[in-house]
Image (cartoon, rainbow, N blue to C red; front, side, top):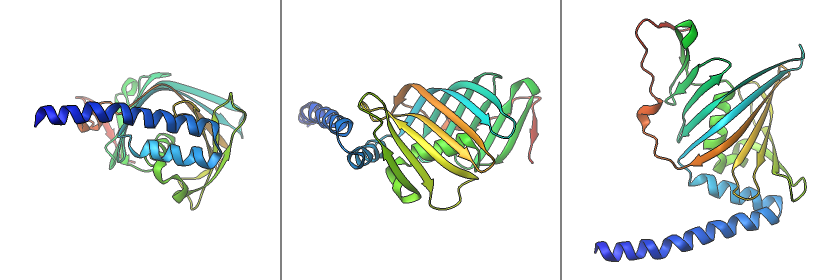
Length: 220
């Protein structure tokens, strides 16, 4: 029985890989509708995502720009962890119910229900792409064969002060490589993703937060 199962798996795996490669190739050269369906199908089977991120926020009213970077980890249905390495070594983590924002240098952690904020909007986007056109009005732009696909998203209903969202999708592997979120206050936040890995083994416990000794818990 084990040998039979092994034979089936080793026979099916190349066919699955070939099918996925063909699907990406078809999307890369096809229409926006084809790409969108392929993108939704790809992310429907993804259970975890990790990536290095660079975050740039531009404040329209003041003309100022802030930057941050680190590595993010996502796991369906709604778990997320953002480990910052600049400008501070902060950690933002959520098990899908509670959000913890740990500010190590200040020896404090802010505890709130999981809800609003750019990291959680990005988490929601990347973990629910398979249902993208259920929550947004989606417009697709090809931008030429040498550039990523561009998706413009307008929420169908109010979404945490979000005005619009733009996604950039790599043509070769159909992975989201950039998100740009504009809020109703005129702040535009760009998050660029690199070194992306999908379906890595991430335990649920990784998204739990244990308050270090001596750290003050703030509950606004």
